[in-house]
Length: 144
Figure: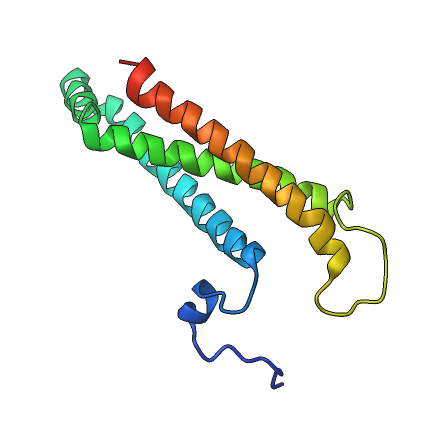
């Protein structure tokens, strides 16, 4: 079955939103943040499992984790968690019908969705930025 809008670009078509709005880019960032959190979770399990090999191996692993590169990685993980959590709450609210607007004739662009979902998106982005700044301050300045 041939579709009207075939994706001939492959992964580039998936990443490049083109004429789509900011919601498409939020979708991509949400997906990448989820994959980053999964990668962190797997690395954390590996790092924690090193205790099985004895105290010397564990101490060597913990000494490696004190490197400044891991501090930056910790901040990137925090950014991923903050964005993914708050954007997930936004998506749940939309799925439950709290930000879909009044029903009307479905003609593009869907104005009711833009008028209700865009302000919610802006609130989530501002809250994410505040949380990321607070977390960055805590990781780089306060925790020293």
